[in-house]
Length: 243
Image (tube, rainbow, N blue to C red; front, side):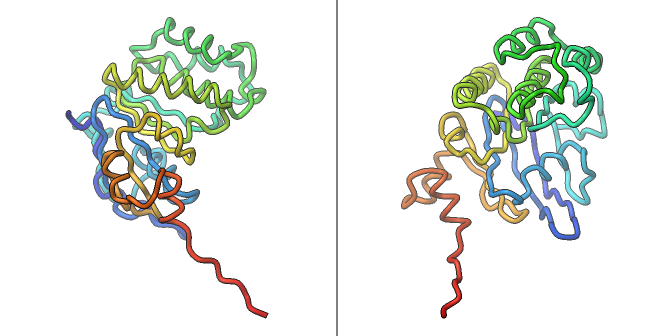
């Protein structure tokens, strides 16, 4: 398979945090989970990849091209969704959609309506009136409505009820079979156990491992799940004062 996304030595420095030479790749038709504890750098990685925050160093190739070389054509192929939409919160869903569809040449009203119905979204509601779970569903609806070949999703299952999460994971698996590549961050490791082909594990701004799901598990034979592995890698013995 060919790599749809290649991240090479990506760096972003903040006063209290460093994203340190992050590298990994995502293949066509595969689902990669980006995992790590809160504050590890998952969201910073995704935002730096998409130039939503400007990285200090590194290279990111989408379909073999950097986003700055052919900005519009590359963006047309990418769908991005995060846990909350901070823009146009006072506007109704239908009005936000009317603006959003103008940015995508391959926008499909048929796909849009399919996901609106599937996720039970009311187009007459304002974004500020949606629950966190519904905001996620709306972000995913717009991302899935323009036939993106790569989906970059920041905590897409956070805030969803168990049934909606199962439906979403089934959609991911369906899209992957059609050739769509999916990178999504999550702290719900059981979701990855159901659908992930590969895992990239980030800790304190550094990639500790990036490999197939099965090989990742083989590296920790004493652990029985992704959650066990995360706890094993992250947990430090607590020090208690002795009286």
